[in-house]
Length: 319
Image (cartoon, rainbow, N blue to C red; front, side):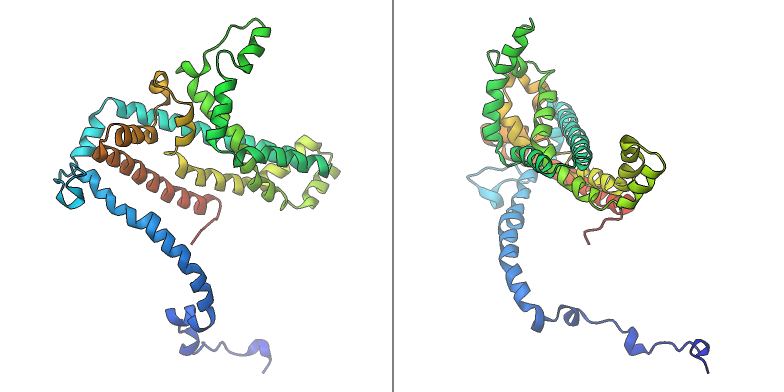
């Protein structure tokens, strides 16, 4: 009988039997890897999971003298107090506006930088530009905040340049309307070079034959970029956009704290800075914990949604 005519023989039950958990782990062979993993797990438990016990403060009228176990239980009263405060809609609005603005400007700038550098053929110039735009990412906002405070002061360099063109001094850091755009632009300047790494890596995987075929058909450089390069990296763009969704509740605490002043409270006060003021300045520990827990829960929901979107539209899974 020919091989192609052999009947289909179902595999035996022993072949279909899945390996047990311990067979998959195979500690006799992989135990050094788990030993290397152990310090990281211990640090994760001590610094990330063990402090979560303090979340119960959000449901108590916490009094430091009585501690966690002795403070009276108030249920959701702190959350009701939070939602009834007039500041809450302002905090939520400012957080969303600043965070979404940062994500959009940073990612679009990073994509534009990656597309531009991808067209550069002089490797020395390309690497020099990459190094220059990467550097701000490694600087702390404590350092950059001092720089921007000097630049944006009424007697700073920017107002001096504007004065040459007859424009009077602009109080950049004393005008609530200007503060959110300043936060968004300075954050994008600091991070767009680092964010471009993902797009640059994706562009290296674009098949050069596609560009050659388009060039043979008469497509110019801009047409090849628009009709070949961008469609090829669309899954990565969708992935970055989906993963950025989990950062919407994070408007950037350090940056705002450095540049912030009470005049800008109407447009610059966000959830993170409110937690800082309520918890450390006014000693309202229960209210501050409730605000932080609300932010964390919303952030967790957004992260779950972002993972689903990444899997749905970019075919990306962590596990």
